[in-house]
Image (cartoon, rainbow, N blue to C red; front, side, top):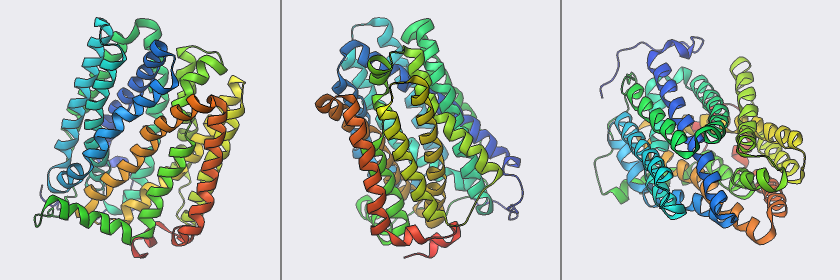
Length: 419
């Protein structure tokens, strides 16, 4: 990739005027829809076949372990090679996984063991796709519009997260797993074709070539440890969602607590995304860049309280409302966390930093599913969700004391200067 001759863009110019950014957004929406549809159907099929909360825990573990072992090579390769091609290849593997799940649904002989095996391969692709997507965005838009691009990107991804679960539930009710996974495969292929059209206008600096992969990755770890903004931000997300997330428990709530079918499960998963999109639309109209650290902590605390309300609810409408509030709070937190990490990280280190960041996010999501499923198996579903929500609130208090520079940071631009 070569540097662009483009003149610096004004921050007031709309980020949507960049054709590469628009193509990137559409491609990513297609991939997110495939991911969300697939997640709903896999969770439903596994629980429907086993009626075992631990089986849902293994769904998360099967995807997390490959991400853990591939963290180091993923971050190093993303900093050294074409991030767009790495992302495209990871989506190709995602399409293959959807095709295999499609075949398993029609064959019917693989059972949950076959599903777990495919999820391991899918976890391998996600180890590269997550950090590649985060590292590619600053190469598509100028730095002056990066915060706006992050907000727009996050909002549209959450919009796709609304349609994905609803579409997954409806497709499964209409045509079972075969139809659903065929749609997922098509969406991944569409994403690849669109991504290859994206022009990289703001090239990254030459990647590191000295030392071993271990040494280069160690530089990324040392950078994170030396920046309380980065370390505090990504670790807050890890522990808050790991301990308090309820998404993995939704199939159990849908069947055993709220007594709704697969379409109801899709609606529950979409409720959080509805809140996220509403918050994203607000941020796109009224963006803010003051008191960002304190606002992030408040948003995570609201997320914990909303999950606590959901945990205790037996009314479908109240559960939907609580998840929507949790989603709105999470959207604000995601927007601030993403901007703080991007503004704090030099471009030639984004792959390694975002690989660690995605590991933390994967830990909070996939290991969160393991934690939730295990807790539900031991305590039953409602006590497990209540305890997890209280733990999230405890994490907020602890991190506000442990990472005071993060709590006190005022503007996104200030993050790069905090040591």
